[in-house]
Length: 406
Image (cartoon, rainbow, N blue to C red):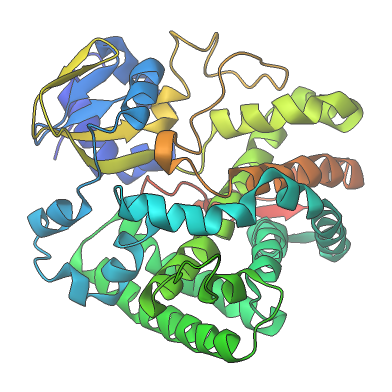
């Protein structure tokens, strides 16, 4: 498809470009800037409401009249048998795609593993993991392979109980499996299916082993009944473990890599983070806002005629929430396209909101709080050693490769 010049493009054409143009997906922010001229929402090419305004997105995330309708989305894409496809079943029957009461029951069973006290207790382990990764950085290397992947995968691996020797193989497997978030074409789904079978069988075997030989890890907790509750079924354990395993490092890997690029592109801000101890909290929030690793959420459909934050939504209308655009909303963020580590005000929408707010948000923040200052202080001359390679697609937004000189 040939796109018009930016001056001539309609809102719908901008949405189409965002969804189909790899260049726009790799760096979507100039497109978001043009989209904001059309207001907080734009009608997409298939009649869906594409929400880009912060206030509207916040309201939509919290409104129970916009339930998830993932099954309908997949059927519409031609996957009438989607539950028979390993990648689609493993991903789209997970917690983030369910509605109450199933969502309520499952979230209650795992929420305790990510409460504030338990996450805070992980800080010494996170600090040691970061220190070990820093010791491995030297010369020219790939930041994703040597730091952005191994740090979060070690942390979530310890929490779940995945043996350290098994963790490296999951980098490619999870990337292939979660490819179905960014695209659902036959080739992507076939590749994702192959990876999902390996992941599913591995987690099935681990869960069975933990039932017989429980340990002090999250998979053991998932398979054990609690307080008279029968707990999770065998499939629910595998799906939940798969979600926590993938989400526990995919988005944090994106946060670390995206954040490093932003800091190196803004050396004055990086210098401030090196020297100002009290800056790390707002700095991590700003890095999450500036280039979020999760750019959009989809498959919500209005259950009735409704109005959210002044925006009418018709019954049956599908919605797409563009978190990356909401985080650059000029109505909420002054100079939204500028990185300012001391920015205050509204929190970024990078972890979603409402009942589906990311379970692991506090853990991801902790890892970033520890990693960025330590990385910048250990390597004052840290620099990019070449162009990075972005992950294809838009929803999961990060790097496959990021060459650096340490």
